[in-house]
Length: 334
Image (cartoon, rainbow, N blue to C red; front, side, top):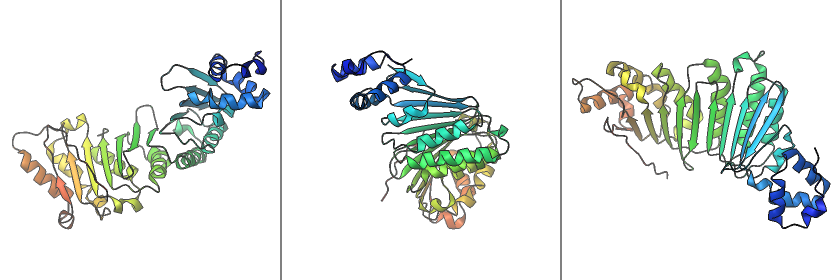
């Protein structure tokens, strides 16, 4: 329903009071009010819309649902119209949930990618029931549009992708040359090749990452999780820039025997061959438990032998922190 408050009366009020009045109206009514008067429209652009810093966008077979809010959660509004998107130029966080294949999801991704969200810090993508996309070209088309969204917003520092209800992969840019990847994704070739790899590779494209931390939560099987985490974080052509690599693991590592752990780490050696500038490898196992026959020193000697080839050991410093204490490493980029 179109608001009955005359625009002339609103313009006669102080700007803050006009913003307060607008906060009681539905989003669609605020848009209608702005269209009724250009001066009032400019006023609301500079006051009312600047409050919204968070957007949650749901898309399914029935259409699109948008919810906007403030960082303090003092105000939350919703709309089904994508016309509000150009107004949201102060967004710091976007959560995009696609529950089913639909043209609305593609349109929403396009609408977001066309905007310049200069304050955007965080992008969360949730893609549900992607295995139901028949033919698969529908999913590929959608991912391509989301990749344009990722690359069109250089201010993003945190990307999180959920390819199903139980899994999650996220990456944070700590500064211009350091990144941290949290990996908790169950094995799925389709999820990796169609969703995870394309999105995260687009995220790090044109960035110079010389320090990388991998935190691997999903340990079943551990060797695939570790390899997938590394492949997710850096495409092949960027691995030669890496100088420091840190590997961390979750609590599930307690259940892995030492012999099996050595076998797992031996499988990452081929990936290190591509990191021609790697100077330091840090392996952190604060949650691991080994029997008394393995002293701490012997553990690290054996792990270094498994991970590093003879040629690699001449250029890479292997750092093994205490097993019961987290190790923090600072990477200085030159």
